[in-house]
Image (cartoon, rainbow, N blue to C red; front, side, top):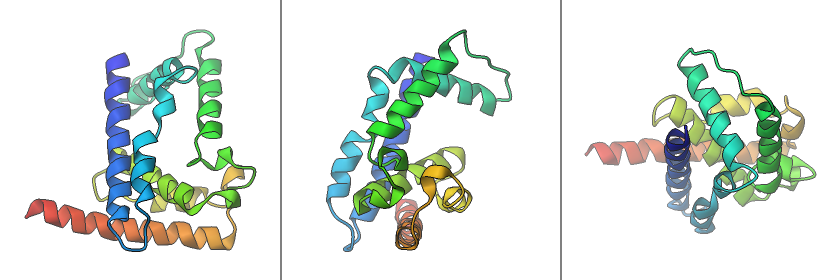
Length: 173
């Protein structure tokens, strides 16, 4: 479980970093995105998140494999507490902020790159955050972005989708 958690989480962070770098290559995006990649999800490797996230990762791995899985007694509460800690201590999660509209452009860009990394993990390298954004923005309590933030998020998604096409074509050559 530990080995799988570490490998999967590091691969996720690597995807986020590649997505951030793809956007940082565009003239309208700040180089500070690369700094965000260096610290993305580091809290998952230290208390109070590490052990519960190992269990959470195992839960999702088993579920994706069609296996039944039940947390040992008391672990579900630890996982919920770790998730709460994670989203309230990492700026790229709307729950960190009093309002999602308080998120900076860097926060929003990292959030889109994070969403895209999950889509890539579950799909392929051309996967997009668009479906997740369509399902969550305005539909979940912490995802009630104002119109300007929504437009910005979808512009970032568009830009990242285009950059990933370019990056994938270049890697084929």
